[in-house]
Length: 92
Image (tube, rainbow, N blue to C red):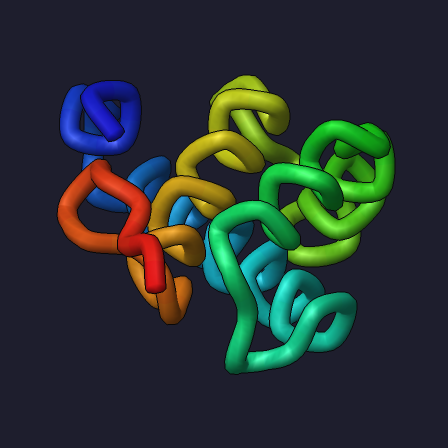
C-alpha cells in the first residue's frame, strides 16, 4: 500500500488504481464476494501470473511493477474476507 501512496503524479496513480480494480474484479470472479482469508491465501499461493495479463489488459503502458499492484489488490480484497479483522483472522 505504501507503493500506491508513493506514486508520483496523478496520471500514474489513476493507472495503478485501474489495475488494482481490474485485479479485484478478477478476484471476485475467481472466488466470489463471500470468501475466507484462507481461500484468498490459497489462490495467491497458486500463483499470480494471471495478474500480469489483467494488468496489461487494464493499462497497456504501466510504469509501476504489476506484481506490486497485484499484492495491493490482494491486500485490499482480503479486507473483505468474512473472517478478517484488521490483520487478525476471526475464528468461529
